Image (cartoon, rainbow, N blue to C red):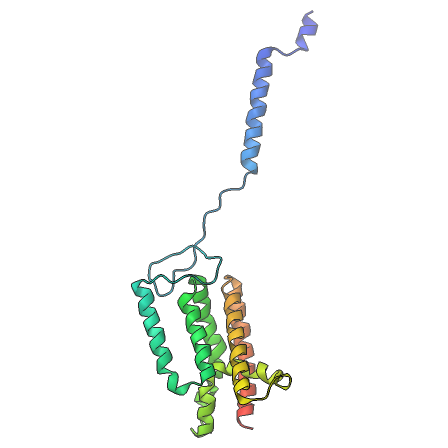
Length: 219
């Protein structure tokens, strides 16, 4: 009888084992659960010192008519009207889209816009820097097209498939310039290495387009 009793477990041992099994199962469940993710924050909102916002899924946001927003809007509108005499109609449209992108963009969009603006448009500043050409009406004609120049080469590539009216040519240049601008900003706002790679590729391609434009200008 003693040998037979040794092979059996007492009720206390059974309850202890059940308790240990429950604790082990609870610990496995706790370990399998993913840790709660803390909301990440975007860089400090440009134009609003000391303000940190959560990363927005949407690239743009509804305006909040604060004092900072109204001051920024006033500056952008004043700059747009100040450039009116030296810009064409298509360039004004492109410039307005750029300003609206920054004005209504979230923190990531504003940061990407500030990086992509010089990367996309700075190479086209050759029209202001060339020394061996007089400031004739022809040169001022190109100066007024400055903000739509990123769309000149794409428009020239598909010109044969479109209407060849001068107004349509300017219109398609503006459309291509706006499309390129929105594309590089959308890629740049992804953060990380995206903004660096996008800015570098944009700058290199803009240099190539600027070289083509300068050759077209001297023809």
